[in-house]
Length: 354
Image: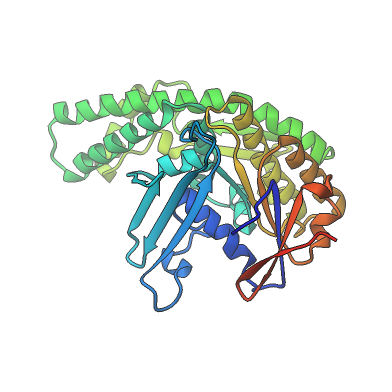
């Protein structure tokens, strides 16, 4: 797609293919759809795979010459992924995410408030990953340790010394993950409150709470030792970072249960904008790119304008979809920054501003 600029607006009727453009960018940055659906839904009928190419002009792999870094992702119907950065195959999606950090605001993003804790852990870990370079190694170590420990627990009769080795290593990596998360949360929470004071001053009782996944009065090793009987009886590790959560409260109650749909969308925007600001301020990987599907949905013009003003102040690249181009033209602070694209029957064409 030619002519991409700072703010790229894709407009067209429902079902025209606007969201598919965002999905293609997300596939390039995360090797999967943000809708959480099977990869088969991304592949045209009667074709074996889908492929997305792009060029990143920033990130750790940016070339000294100033030329962009080519990236490519291919997903087959079987689920196999082939990823290349700079023409070379890479093994993990983490390498891809480091080159093209993405923040997504879509209908699925409401799951941050209404969904299970897993989505909120992913949200928190996204931020930690992009500002703390040691985090991913500890996260990988934790995943290996808990898998091995759970395998031993399911086996039934196990030697205490064998389980103790994995319990010790699990406790060490779990404590490290928790420390990284707590440090990040300590700067995320006040930044979120600052943004929400601007987006929705009436929601002054909003609060974020971090739950680490075990009794905060105990070290993780002690918690694992106290839970030994339950773990061996049920065959898996009950406590730990894999049970962590970030609760979003309003007046002490879950925001998902007390806020209107429009207010919930503002909270989701606040969470995502807070992470983008922190990454620009603290991250070694530069700024993130925002993918926003149908921004005007559930938001009136006043609040859409406030969200756009914050995005504009972050000087980040943005991709927004809407039905009518005027929905974004009327709320983006600087019209000269907008690049408009009309989408019809899956075809994307540049559209003049005038």
